[in-house]
Amino acid sequence: MDTSAIQQSVQLLRSRGDLLYLLNDIITDAYGSQAATINMWQFNYFSNPNRCKGRYRSFQIPKKSGGARTISAPCKSLKYILRIVNILLQAIHKPSTAAKGFVPRLSIVDNAAPHVGKNYVLNLDLKDFFPSISEARVRARLMAKPFNFTDEVATTLAGLCSYRPYSKETAHQRIAPCVLPQGAPTSPTLTNAICDRLDMLLSGVARRFNLTYTRYADDITFSSNHYVFSRDGEFMTEVRRIIADQGFEINEKKTRLQRRHEHQEVTGLTVNEKVNTARRYARDIRNLLYIWNYHGIADAERSFLWNYDKRQRRVPDMINAISGKLEYLKMVKGANDPVYVRLSKKFESLQNGNTVLGYKIHKTWTINRFRFTHGYISVGYERNELLDRLKYDDIPDLFKNAVCIDGPHPYFYIEKRIKYQGQLYLHRQFLRVLRNIETEFLEFLNGGECRRTFFVSECTRKNKDGRLWKGFLVHHAISRDGSHFL
Image (cartoon, rainbow, N blue to C red; front, side, top):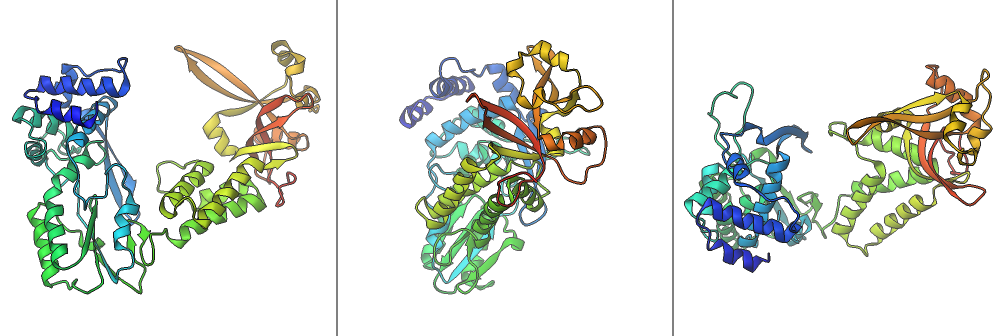
C-alpha cells in the first residue's frame, strides 16, 4: 500500500479490530499473500505490557564516551508486528525539517552539513532520551494531529510500542512506568513525532538569535558566527526552559561549545571546513591495508584484533569491517573523493590478488580462532577408510603422497556435528596441510608445543587438470613480499 492509501484507511479506524485488519493489509502488500499475518490473540497479548514481561530482552553495549547503554530488543514475534506498525506511522507522520535522525533518505551527513564553517558550534545531549518518554505521552501524541487515532486504537498502539523495565528486585511489583524501549523499530518514529513541538520552539529561538538548529535523535546542535552561548545568557536560559517544559533534561556532561580554531564535530563528523571524517578514520584503514599488502593477511588480522574495542560483544570479520568502513567513508566524502577512490582500489586489488604459491587466499584465521568458529581439527590414520569412501581421483594430491609417520598415512580434516531434519550427522571436510609442516602440525594436534603460530586460510587453487580446488590450507605466516609461506 502506498502512503496515500494508508492515510485514507487510517481515517476509517475506529477499533482494535480495524487496526488489525489494516496491519494485515500492509503485510500482504509489502511481503506478499504468503506472509504470516497477525491474529487477534497475538495482538491482545503483545499490546498489554503488564501481561507479557518476556516481550523484551535487555542487554548492554559499551558507549564511545564510556559506560554502558541499555538496549531493550523485542522478541521475534513482537518485532515483526512493530515493523508493520512503523510502516503505518511513517506513512502518516512527516518529521520536522530540523529532525535529521531516523528519517528516510537522511543521514548524519545531512545533520552536520548546515553547521559547516561556523565560528561557534554548540552540542547538547538529552539525558535518558527514550526512557524519559512514557506510555501515556505516546498515547496522547497518537490521539493528536496528524494521527487522530481514537482512544482504543491509540491505547493499543501505545501498549505495543512501550515496555515496563523490570529488575530482579522489583520483578514482582508494578512500580516502574511503561516507557519507550531503546531498540524497538517504532521508537525512533515516535520520538520524532513527540519532539515536533520541541523542534518548533527551538527553531523559533534559533531564528530569533540568527542561529542554525538541527536535531539528530537526542543530539541537539546550534551554530552561528556570533557569540550568544553564555551559560547564564538569554539564549541558553530560553533553551533550558523549553527543553524542561517538554519533559526532557540536558546532560550537562556532554554539553560542549566548539570554537573556530578548535576541532568542531557534529554527530561524529568534522565540520570546520567541510563535512569530513576524523583523520584517524582513513588512517586506520590505510594502516590495515598496508600491513595486508606487505606482511600478509594474517598479520593484518592480528593487528585488527589487537586494536579492536575489547568491550564489544562480538568481533567482526576484518574484511567485512574494512568494507563497512569504506562504505561509511563513501557516504561522508562521496564516491569521487580521491581518498576513498585510492583506498577502495587498494582494498579491491588485495582481495583479488592475494595469491601465494598458487593458492588464492580469501580469508585467514589463527588456528585457535578457526577451531572456535568451524569446529575441531582431527587427524585420521587409516588410508583404506579414506579410499573406501572416496574415489582415488577425488583425493587431494597431498593425501595420496602423505608422509609416513610411525607407519600409517595421516590425513587431516575438520569435524563437527550438524543437525539436519532433526538428526545429528558427523560432518567432515578435508584440510590441506603444507608438506613441510605436516609433522609439526601433527605434534601440535597431539598436544605438543609449537614455537610458531599456525594459520588456516580459506583459499582456491587450480589443479593440474584445470579443476578448481576450494578448501582450507594450514600454514605459518606469509612472507613480507607475499611470495611464499614462512
